[in-house]
Amino acid sequence: MSLRLRPRNAWEALDLGFALGRVHAKRAYGTWLALFVPAAALALAIFHDQPVWAWLLLWWLKPLFERAVLQLYAAEIFGEHPRIRDIVRGFPRLAWRSGALGALTLRRFDFARSLHLPVFQLERLSGREARSRNAVLDRDARGAAVWLTTMLGLVDTILAIGASLAIAFLVDVQTPLGTILEGWFRGRFEHGVDTLYGAICALVSMTLVEPFYVACGFTLYLQRRTALEGWDIELRFRQLAARVADESRPPAAARHVAAALAAVAVALGIGAASPPAQAQREPAREVARVLADPEFGHEQQVSTLRYVGPRMKDDKKERKVDWDWLRILMEMVANGARAIAWAAATIAVLVILYFGARWVRLKGLGTGTRERPQFLFGLDVRPESLPDDVAAAARAAIESGRLREALSLLYRASLVRLMDEGLEFLQGDTEGDCLRTVKRGIAPGRAGYFAQLVEAWQLIAYAHRALARDAALALADGWPAAFPPPAAQPREARA
Image (cartoon, rainbow, N blue to C red):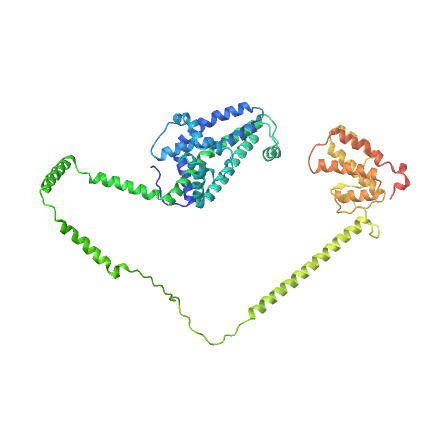
């Protein structure tokens, strides 16, 4: 046996499995690829327009391919070196005799599959016997087997996603990261070459992980059998017996001499007289007489209770209990509660003042006329900074491709016109504050146009996203209707 069996805990057994996988990596991967590559090619050919289904089918069939790898490991550790061709040739019979049907149906989502696989394949157990064996193995090893499945499953997923992202970032046409992650985590794949690359990466990561998964489950199984049945002791005794037999075996000449002496001794012993029957019966009578004595035929069990603990000395002096610690603790709790109460009250007052002032400002209940701001969130809102014909200037900027400049002009002109009509904006107002003030102070139609203008400005100024030229032209053409010249403006529209 190439493995040295000794008592190990479950995590040491998993580490031994990784070592087993590294030692036999070449033949293990060869066995896996000999079966997996033809199956993968066939699945991708059938589901060529939806490679995700091909990957899902091969993922479901993993317990079948694991049986071939386990067959190789079991043969290797016992000194056999089967050819990969022989394993592949006997794979259908191996799969049928090792409970493959149950592994693909009822037991497919068994997280301890790697630990239970040798029971069905190597021991050839099924039904109640297999369940009893698995229950015994699970007592101290199921947790490690479940963690093995979980961690290697995560490694498989990370390798597949990492390879897919690497390909997506290295190709000439860059794919947005959000689109890639949405395809992986929500299943919104677009059928094409990108999906095929993703499926191939997932199959490659599955190939890298599975031989080690089978090896770790196999060594975990061997560790449990060693702990339960003392396999390491049995193997040691067999090795010692074989070595002693080899060392104590006499040469051929000595064996011939010993045989001759034995024959002479037998010949001489034939003529010797056998002892009388009376002499043979005397020891038996003596033994019977001794056993008949009451000392040998009487059993008695005597049990007594005796205190063996330490002896405590009686301390009759009355001790005074010190309660100062409780008083200090209560003072600390009281001081802490007082500080928390003052802090909560202060925060409550500040919150009330803040929202009260905000409500007064939004309702326009402040007294007095505020100074008109000249700049709002970085925009120049002085009337002299605007051209005579705002809509024409904005349209000309749009025609020349300067969309940001055109929207800035429309936005500034709208704010100037609103302040001319009597709406008040503060120096620190944001776009949201201005929009709420406008919705409260002007007609709904004009407020709707202003909301569209603010949304377009935020899209191009902050989100740095392109705005359609037709949408910009519509805003420029709609500005004169929303903000007519002061001479043509109705009286009731003024603030």
